[in-house]
Length: 136
Length: 197
Image 1 (cartoon, rainbow over the protein chains, first blue to last red):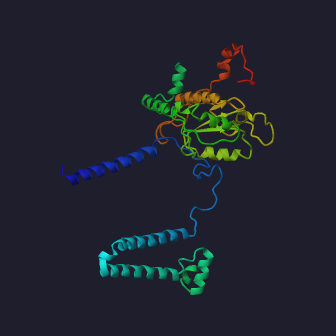
Image 2 (image 1 turned 30 degrees about the horizontal axis):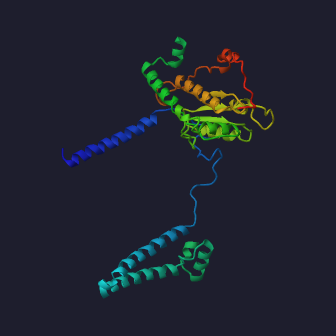
Image 3 (image 1 turned 30 degrees about the vertical axis):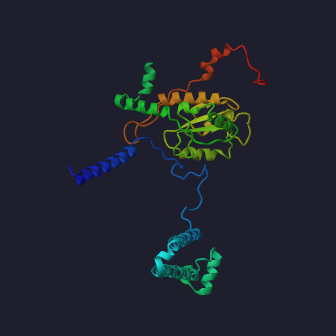
């Protein structure tokens, strides 16, 4: 048996076994249906509201900025320890990289990525007319 | 003996009955309690979960925080009328098979609170399997109650599947420890004072 046919047998066994387990566990055991049976468990209380909430993603922004600055620092340090050996070609490469990063940051700054908090962000949008269609 | 056999295998089907016995044996030694307490009796219940009393010997040390995973609800403490709907709600959220232990005088009968705010016995709205006496019961009493429940779980008959075979639960009559232990307890001549250890 070559490698691919044994893989096919393995796939069939996996699918059959998973299906068998699901069918058997579906059929076995007892069932009951009472008023509270399907309700989410909230220590005996009835749940209120929906789990599908909108919440501000400011912390996500913080995490993304950390990644951006982190990557920039990684490249800068790697270049800095070998700056003399790399010469002007290395300097040009890191300059291109930093110019692109700073340009991206300037764009983010201008679009209000650093204006955290719902109210400050709205003020920024009103002042600069950026993304007004998103706020409506 | 024959009556007990009939109670254990009420459906007459040997194969199903043997499987059901095996399942009952497995359930008997893996009763997972629901982490839930109402009043002071829960202190004694929590004590019986400590290493000194070592409830793991009976396979019941796995306390579940969700009623979906728990087999056993121990109503430990005074069931106030305000709390009774919540207890009932959590009982409804437990999956079959499920059992109830009523722990302490208050859960058994309302105890000394014969007043407007207390449910006079949790068995007025839950199917209680074991009653544990005491106010509060000691951890030893709780363990005896657990052993009684294990006996009941090991002997009762339950359907293997909701889709196949006969349905319904057959339980033996609950033994009364008061009657069983009466002669032995009557022999006691040295009653310890509660004032000393």
